[in-house]
Image (cartoon, rainbow, N blue to C red; front, top):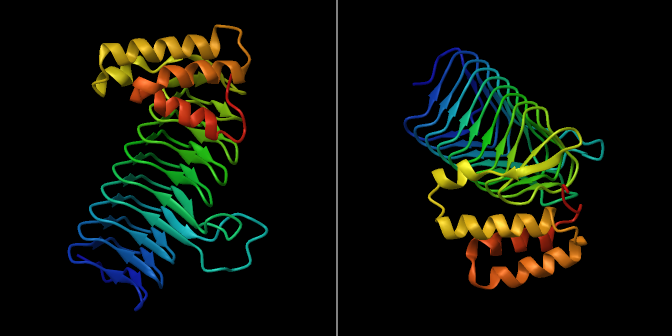
Length: 256
């Protein structure tokens, strides 16, 4: 299961069933869960913990130093969950002490070739990153978000659950849940209705989300007034509670 041409540090911990292809390099303080496969020429540096049943393709670089000039060799870390697909030439860096000290990727994510996930990013579950999507530092991507190819996300931004960015989008501010954005800088272009239907959102929930979108983007209300209206609607609608929480916690305003 481990090719003799791979280089594995004695301090690395590999569970039963881990597959390591030729010329992969696994450094000290790396832990890899059962059933994960590591492609040829992949480099993994620690401290890094990778969960079960991940598939990591050739030439990926995981857990290397953050691309931050303030970084001075502190023992920050990378954590990757279970059942993720990480394609060729992806780069995922460790965190920095200027934030939580960790970059974290959840479960069941589909991360296509040449994606870059910078230091201190937090990725949820069931996300999709198309080829060459790139995150600056301190970005948060919530569950089921989809980033089109060559999407660029500014540092400290957050992409909400079930949001969708078109190819080549530049995201300079937060993108609320359920919203489609495109352009550079990105602008809102409706709701990810097809995604919501595929994930079994009820017709009533979709109707309420449509109402909230109209309040946020088509009512000519100031942002604070729109947030107040959505907060009132969210009292008895869990789907809008997700949007309300996002709007209240946004630190860089929102795409609007």
